[in-house]
Amino acid sequence: MTLALQTFATVKDAGAALKAAGACYLGGGTLVVRAANEGDVSISGFVRSTEPALSAVAVSDNEVRIGASVTMAAIARHPDLAPLAHAARVVGGPAIRNMATVGGNLFAPTPYGDFTVALLALDATVSTGDGELPIETFLAKRESNDAIVTAVGFTLPKEGGFRFLKVSRVKPKGVSVLSIATVLEQAPDGTVSSARVAFGCMADRPIRARAAEKALIGRKLTADGIAPALAVARDGISPPTDPIASAWYRNEVLPVHLGRLLLA
Amino acid sequence: MAKVPVQFTLNGAEKAEFIDSGTTLLHALRDKIGDTSPKGGCHQGTCGACSVIIDGELRLSCLTLAEACNGATITTTSGLSEGGVLHPLQRAFLDAFATQCGFCTPGMIMAAKVLLDHTPNPSREDVVEALSGNICRCTGYEPIIQAVLTAARSNSQNAA
Image (cartoon, rainbow over all chains, first blue to last red; front, side):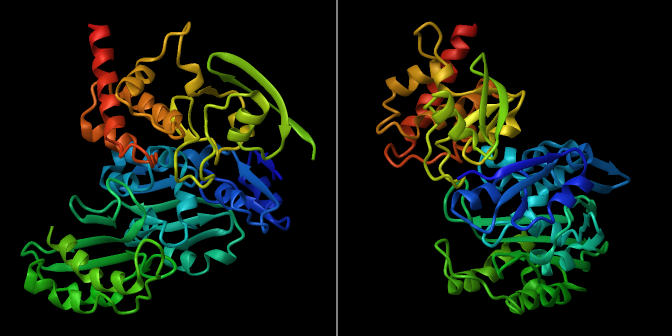
């Protein structure tokens, strides 16, 4: 059985069509067509918009706005988004990166959604047809979101301030055991003045590591300096068990990989 | 369900069909147009057997809706040989024993073609990265990697 596709020139018209029961927004297709192929009977049709703004990237005075339809491949090769290139390149293989969109990644369930981990550490805002939301608020209620995501926005971190790590068993590319993104600011003496840390695969969606963030403030990025942060890194996590890794394994290796990222 | 028209260029030839709305490109190519070179493996975007080149980019035809390809230029492995002469990648795959059951081969060749189109002299690391979305359960990958490197050298020699 096939599912009808409706294409609209504007987000507004697509949003109206999306209110029909079972209608599902189609971005790159790597989540929703996959679900339909797998037999997800909750999907009765696809809706998409070809509004040009959805495919635009704008960078001005370090303020970034990425349209929801921009693909991982486009982010990886965009000269102004070089700090994020690595986080985009670790999403899937080349074909997936040519299709998977930044908007879709916000909805990717664990163990997917690695780029969203980066966006969470960047404290991005998510723009929808209903307005703008902090990404953490958006992620908390993404299942009930019924407005089309149009863009994400964030401030580019200072040079060297953004770090990202994805751990997978299959090389060079595989599904995540876990992913970690950090945005750190350091005083001239090297002490951490501000820290945002986000984890992937440590819950059913990307989460902030508040306790670790707090423990990093005022500390230097040395083995001794980060020890308190590693000690509380597991606070609030509930990693899943899946074919990639057990919850126990994820729990055990999280501080190890966080330590490696912070000391890199 | 109402049929919808789709039109695109497939391996240099104009194709126009009426399909059920929501049909995947893989289904349209194989069952409507008769190009069975893209293979339906997982239908989940995991195996890469259905890989095709759409407007110069590698895509997965199992996750692409045919209607979204209106006006596009599509290349599949069946369009690579010219006048009965195999494409250098096809020749190299045969010579290097890079194909066993053959199911992954068309997707591997599409991924390799995009790589060589943009990076004529790839490193081994480049090849491994380019093939990272394609699964082979037979060869252990090494013959495939060597075939792509051989094809690249062959292209370079022919261009010299």
